[in-house]
Image (cartoon, rainbow, N blue to C red; front, side, top):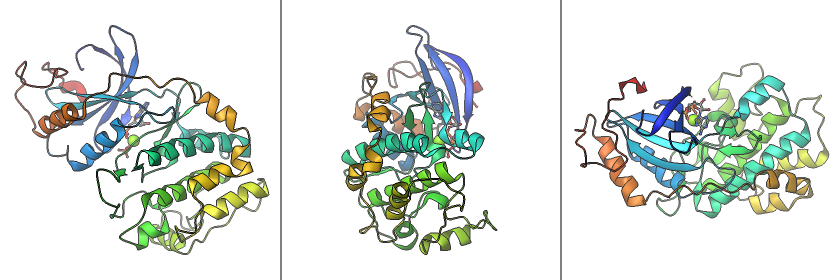
Length: 317
Ligand code: ATP
Ligand code: MG
């Protein structure tokens, strides 16, 4: 465990490591800490995720706090979202009512709009990457594939999750990430309302090739018994447009009466102050990451970042 923190419980395992709930011994603050094994897996992608995430401060985005080194792991400290994944809520309920889906969608759009204003596109938006806090406030996480237009060139690799991916990402090697994020937001809205993915073939949901083909053809249907307003359908239809230039943009989306309805409820619930943890200097962050690339680095006191914890932490994984 990083020095100064108590272990509370395990939150789950991801592709790169384990996430644990920890508590600051002094302040009692709960934080989610992701432990990534030190070594070559701490690469440019991890660096990109952390550098992008570090610069973002918004009520609908999981707040990045800091990174620290233990002897065996890079520990990434994040705001704790105690309400679980939005995906699980839908999996339990089946479908959400239009008003409830809009409430979550509004917050997703506000968070993504903010990212875009900071020149960061997320590129892996999905309900599994949407956490909730104790007040059901949306907290977007996982910037693993995000690419900042400031730090990097136009996104040019086909990354993302097939079910949420935009046609231009599948077909093109150069695409503007912002409109691809809008597409993914449309998929998230559809899933909340319909309780299923729009572009999966209902007869062969796990056939990725079929899904890809249907995305490319923008081939989807609303469930016949779906009880949603015409305005809501129109929003989805304006998002699921193959040409990213013709697709509704976030500013246009935000102006629609459907989006404006009860917006203040969603936004006021999101307006609690963002915790201003002492922001870790970007050079300090990069130095820690460089050190983290080296596995089993000697844990000499004073030779690493001040947050370095030379104590044994083999129980991390
Ligand atoms: P992937 O590797 O594709 O991101 P994942 O999202 O399951 O997969 P992690 O991001 O490492 O993996 O997260 C592991 C678990 O911890 C998930 O169940 C996730 O919901 C939970 N989790 C991650 N970050 C937080 C957080 N800030 N607050 C609460 N739970 C979190
Ligand atoms: Mg994750």
